[in-house]
Length: 133
Ligand code: SF4
Ligand code: SF4
Image 1: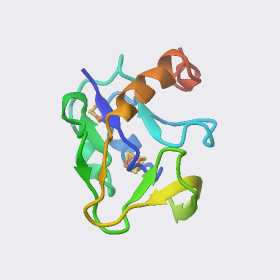
Image 2: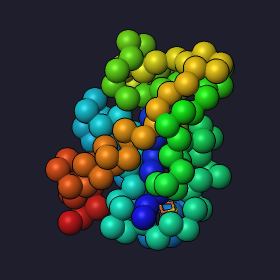
Image 3: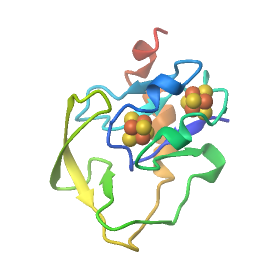
């Protein structure tokens, strides 16, 4: 199993530094892969990244919710929105995302498609380069 980063990720990078096996990478190109991704072959399921995420975007694979109930103004980044998000990562670097959606309190979203996307990033996407495979 692995942990999965879901579309609640806003690329603030806080999870990266706590991972003991350095298996979390930013999706690139960002316009195509808007989240950070976890290499499923390297993740040891320690859970250290989960409490670090300010947006509560990370779940054990078997706990990724199909019916996540959003908080007010929670951002959803899966390249299917029409908004722009401008923020900062935990080092103060600018984060600029396009195709984001702002959710209303109680909106229900399915986060499970991000499981396959995470695997795809390393199998068929550019992720194998990101972790030096
Ligand atoms: S669960 Fe542990 S090993 Fe897996 S990505 Fe998170 S910090 Fe890294
Ligand atoms: S800490 Fe959360 S928001 Fe930041 S990069 Fe990791 S998963 Fe994304």
